[in-house]
Image 1 (cartoon, rainbow, N blue to C red):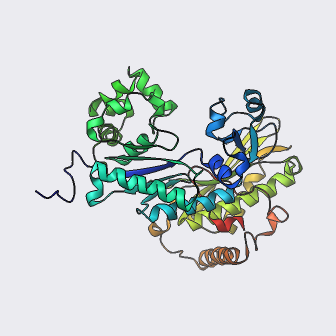
Image 2 (spheres, rainbow, N blue to C red):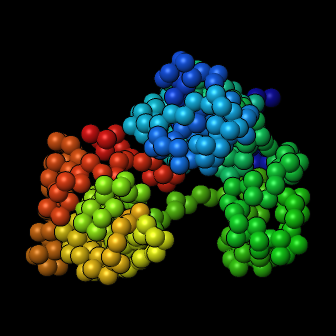
Image 3 (cartoon, rainbow, N blue to C red):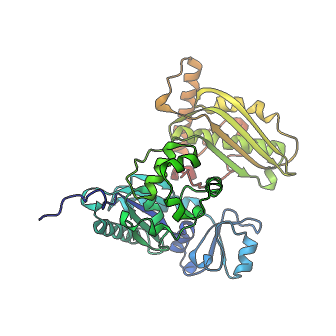
Length: 415
């Protein structure tokens, strides 16, 4: 009898998840042969007082991980190579990795700069066929991007479980999980090893007497609801842990923000203000790029003496232009304490997707919105901040582009 195109639901694997191993460090090892096989720590700035933002597997073998201070890393292994991060290179490799995966399988969701999720269709949903596709994805990355840019691939019935499968074999792993493997395949994890369980959720679980993943897997939907306070979240967790199909819904963006630790020459009142204005330009441009408008702007400052300042201002409903944001920022900054600042951050909140907003009613609003779009077009053509407002004068090169978990800058942002 011929095999049906797709397997029955209790056997099907629906998602393939790619997790790049020690991504920043492995890219550096691919780019620089002298780093291959060596303990490597990646830092944002080349100073002794900072910490590693990534570490190679050779460094992890000596106890050097993300968050390890540079001085501590050198004590753990004096021969560790400390390398300054190159965000533009990592973004370039990110796009090359996506292109490589696309040569085998469509990338449905870019989860972060080093994680991607792909749906499996038809015959690909048979576990053994899913394994073959996963092997092809790995080989495509290695042949098209580089043999030292390693990855772990997980295949499973739902996206959450596919991500957890990548953690079962690192580095360079390939793991296929079916519902028949549950809950056994998860029992080696601790509570906070599971994606979605951090400090707050862990405290709730422990207060309910849940100490292990085995106990977690035994919770009913009602018990989950009592712990989380949400029936929807309860149903999602219950289904994820059992390998049941879960409809993934895109998360609505809530904030766009940028922060920067100030070098000594920018810590004065005037200098920190200019950097804050630069951050506001960046946040406004990124918000427009991803298709949102904002209702509030918040300014946060950590002073050199430890004092903290935070002030929020109303922008109006559906604001998307930089000039209106600067006009709201000015009065907020007047409340900042006098003295040198160590860190500044600007955050846009109350975000609304552009498709959900109405067109501006007033001519001035339309004019300012068109001005913002025009400035963005000029920047895309001639380089970042080719035109900008005078209050940022002299600070255009401060606060260099960084990569966060939720924000992947475009290559044009490094121009």
